[in-house]
Image (cartoon, rainbow, N blue to C red; front, side, top):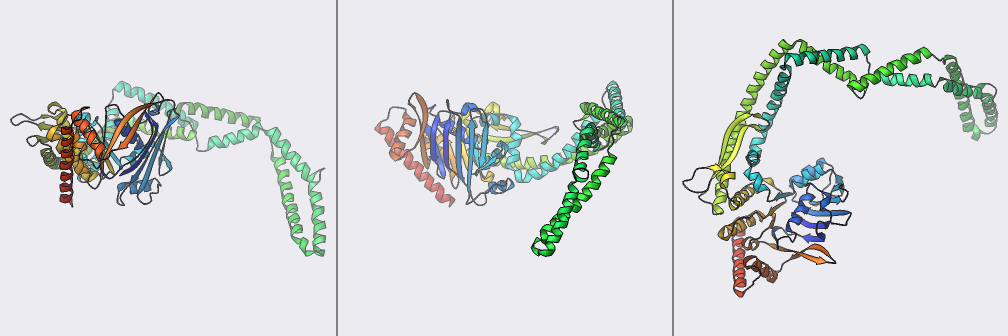
Length: 565
């Protein structure tokens, strides 16, 4: 669950520190007070897309930090281990800083992480249902994903097998298509590959050759300086400077001294070793001087060879190794083109085999999906019945389509909202209130398997009122039992079911607007629920109605909790 939330310099929020409780928390307030801004902050905290526009005007950065408490078996524990994140006593701290420059810094338990990792871990902690999900629900492109998520345990292995077969089939199909292109394009391609292959093969490139030649070129180009330094070194040791002779004198003197005092023996040995090492170096310097020879012809050969390397790298790769690899690749392609008819037949035979494999695995996946769809239909029917849509029929329809990455199925949700009317696509038949209830039904179903720490609803009760609103409040409360639900609502029936009621206000101080959050006690809560029911005019009758609503909600909550336990 989200236990603590700290927000600084975010949008119209100056600084907020909010403590959340387990169970159901509602956030209410006037339109524009900043309720959705709070959810925006939480969304960014768990990996949402950020922008410098979120930073409060005149500030350098916005800071968002959240403290989550998770159970010992929560899936984030295993996921965090993969990234070397330590989680002690079930505590996870997410932090995100958004700078006015556009830079974003993410941390998990103090360890800096890329945004992709924050997003991956964040989705295990928070499930945010925003108003845009209504549009996703109306888009049939998302329906297959919803079905697969519903029966993920059963479908995921079958989907993986299908995708393996699909990738193999797609690769062969693409290769066959490429080789089946027009004769003119093929001839042009073959001419180009033949030229490139001949150019690379004629160069007789070898791995590591460029580096070796570069080193040799550098030695030849600096011959005079190298020769001078080696000569001076030799002369310092062996000729007029007689450095070696002087060390020899020191060695003999120390040998005499060590014979008189054993404490000098280590020093005598050190000088002796130095003498013989230097003597070996003298002979090596002499041999080096004798072998040093400037060869201008060889230098020209190397320069010419290196120039060829540069020319080939400009065309075929950043390094000679890449040029060699590219040459091998196009040689294979040219060979396949040369043996085109034979290769085409091989690919066609291979494609037919893979096509059968894809279809077989796709049909097995489709059969499992249809079985899962039946279960999903039943589950949604049960949920909708509790939301006063007992006469509504929900149906998952299938249509076989071409091979694609997620299977052979095209899936779309259909509904029949009135008896005697035909089934129609969800997008064409559902009103705003009905969509809200369908979405809540789906959330109720998925919350049993997803295992996230917190579920957040942003005005999920749009378009409903009366007893439907009461039913939605009860269902949201049920989701919160043993978990945590945060809910922005404009309905008193939903707000009355909450365990914690946060009130959002907007004030102006020193010519700046800022958002404030306060936890309502019973009396303040009665006033807020009265405002939600009757508007600005608060009467004794309204207060009496609110007290009755709270009493009824408390009874329903106790009854439900007792039923669960």
